[in-house]
Image 1 (spheres, rainbow, N blue to C red):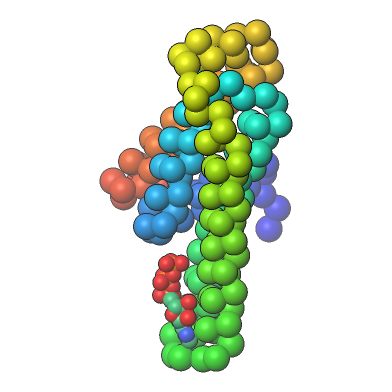
Image 2: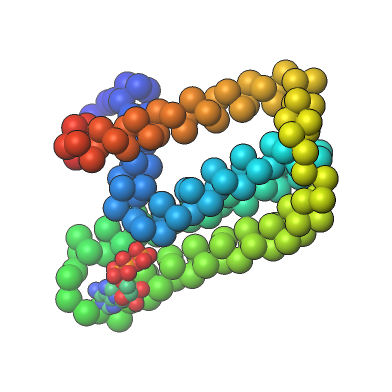
Length: 160
Ligand SMILES: Nc1ncnc2c1ncn2[C@@H]1O[C@H](COP(=O)(O)OP(=O)(O)OP(=O)(O)O)[C@@H](O)[C@H]1O
């Protein structure tokens, strides 16, 4: 079946909403990610600092989504205890754990040393970088759209 780009994007986005709606850890990681990214806007970060923080947050969320997909696939195959089912789920959970440890490392190596430089003025510095403003706007729109879709999915609308 050939799907339009819009449809593919829509299914992919609802995959994100599904893991956010059903996985407690995903909610924690998502909120922690938003918190850390917001904090970053007020720290004296350079481009590499932003990259490290952004990738650390993205890696946790991506591994959590792959973990959710593997859990669903295993549950589809068997609800009974099976050694291979355990291996698949434990390895997927291990990937999330590694990503979380990586994000703790980035927190201590990148964020903590810059915390003394916390200032609201750092936020205004961002005006000097049009690309940062564009990325920030795209990020904010994405978060807004995610929250609206999340609310609608709880109300029983959408793909679920
Ligand atoms: N069918 C199965 N056969 C063997 N072991 C299983 C099976 N299903 C789950 N397990 C074991 O139970 C653990 C938890 O599995 P479960 O499907 O409940 O994930 P979960 O607790 O929802 O994980 P998460 O917190 O990441 O969402 C797995 O890591 C695995 O060790």
